[in-house]
Length: 327
Ligand code: GLU
Image (tube, rainbow, N blue to C red; front, side, top):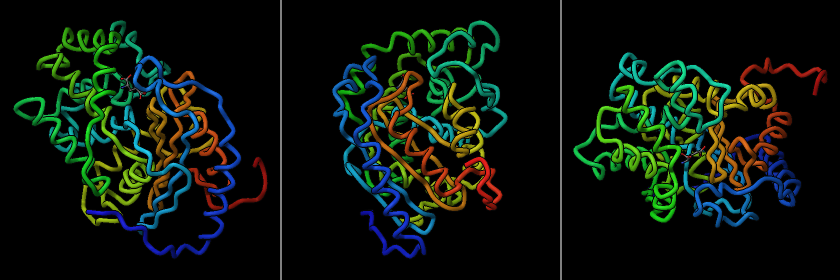
């Protein structure tokens, strides 16, 4: 279904548009960070690309910059594929395969799996996400991928496809993820074929979206699982809530504490430069810019979110009272 940008009815419409314009011009010149060159195809990204989008639970869309430019989901896919597995298998089985504890380690860490738990700490790090992909049902890879594509089509309201070049580029260079998958198989977390699970994981990471799509995905969670423009029920409200909890504690990997302190929203980043955050009951926000920091988060996006959270007092812990202290 084609998206329609509805007439804005927010009282502070002009203020939101001005804020987006200001943030866009403030951070456009910022060229800090680097592209995710460990996946060679991602190193080709245009570092000037920058977009911000907001979708409210009423379906109102605000956008600025290169908001139609496609990029791959990468780790932004993880919470949503987890949601699909959760709705298929239920909490009890999921907990036998993947935990719900944050780690202070990097997104691609293998240490915790080998040393202690023998079960991934959470579904947001690579080990957990690969385990989750292995749990997506289907007769073969094509079939299993179709379930994931259908899921994202429901989230964004139009058809989506895989960037085959990014997929092949990651597949060819994923030595660390392959090591993780082998360890997962050794510990009986992955039951099926390792290569098929990895391929499915690389494919879900290579699904193409734009910044408005990301904001729509976030807004669907903000709206209890109902896509705010199409009205399609994408997932149960309980699942949306569970996903948000995991995004809050684990979505920003080893920056989760700093993010909680400075932004205070459930969020998920991806190494291609997308970052989405959810203001429960209100809106989804997304930023895209391919220059990332050493922890895998878009540098411009981090800056935009910190400013936005301050201007609009977005933290989920906000009381709504602002007395000017500690701004
Ligand atoms: N496909 C990437 C990987 O597995 C995703 C990492 C990310 O976006 O944080 O390394």
